Image (cartoon, rainbow, N blue to C red; front, side, top):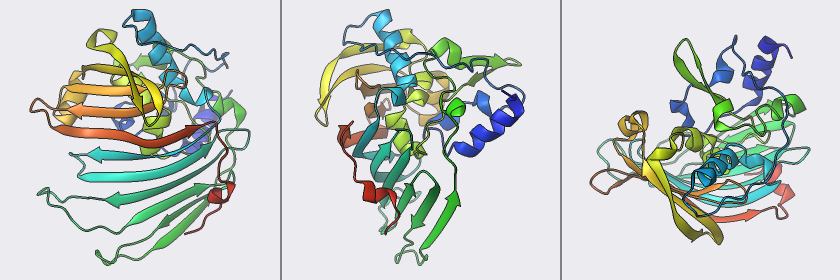
Amino acid sequence: MNKRKATKNIIAASLSIGILGSGLASLTNQDNALAQVTETKEVKKVHFTSSNTESNKINIQNTMLNAIDYYSTVSGSLEYYSKRGGFNLLVTYQNDLSEKPKSYEKTLYNQKTNVKNQAMPNDEYEIKTYDGDTLTVYKSGSKERGTASNVTTKKIAPMPTDTRNLFKGTTMKERIGTIDGEKLYNFRFEPSLMSGTVKTSLLPEDIAMGFLEDTTKWDIKGEEKIAGVNTVAIEGTLNANYTERFNAKNFKINVDPHTGIMLQMEVINDAGIMVEALYTKDIEIDKTLNQKLFSFAK
């Protein structure tokens, strides 16, 4: 594979890394340094348990890194709150990761706050659809803000198989490298064009590499049911980079042991205040999807 050509194809095909992944430098964005691991690996399901062992921790990392290989369809809704960003999003989504990947997302920008942390009325929403050929983004505009609605469309061909399989089945050690002393990270490129918010839940590789890289900083605490799914609960302390970004030290996440999907995340500061959070409200995995949603309609 021509590394320069492959890099450009990947960047064009990838809509976004996870919402937290912006703090991790992506190795695939280095034009002269496409990841060393390019072959497709066999993906084996390894269901981790709630036992706080090193082998379970490694299995958690690897499953989260490759979550999109453990399910074909998913639909649901989640809420994402960011104190530092001053927003609270409610996202309804469905994703088809079959041979012709497709996606639908509707994002409500509710409970947005200004710099003084005062609630501001916000009637905006956004609908994003990808039917395997065309990406359409509709922004409703806002009467409160006096902004107009608009629709943008962009033809995006299905992701090539070799790009889709890049880093498939790889481990933490194969995902993290260094160039000129700088730590860099390899991200999967999922083919349905998830937004960063949804990707943080459905392909939580940014959490695995950002929060869970050092297994001495977190522990498996047991099992909890989130949105009807039996999850493994994890608690730990953030590394120096994320501690500075969030002005917080502690986190808790809940992960589905069968798929690696992260259903819940909480980042809490020393005062016990939630500063960043993701909550899955409902989710269905490998169920029938509403095909009509993949074709754009307001």
